Image (cartoon, rainbow, N blue to C red; front, side, top):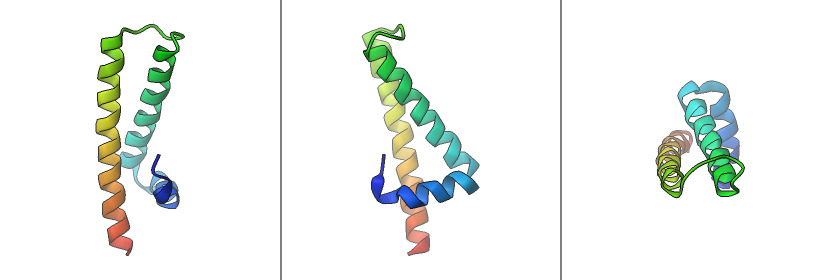
Length: 74
């Protein structure tokens, strides 16, 4: 996710607890969705779609933070 911000992500994960929480939650949802799609974790199609929407919302929040921090350091 966001390879152009890889270094900034690493930095933020060490100093920004809010960013780290969002990042970890995004990754947890990603693993859960993949498990549900592979049918190794129980879940309906509706549940999968709702989790995907939640994951996208988290991704949008992470992107806003990354853009703001990148602009501050530019």
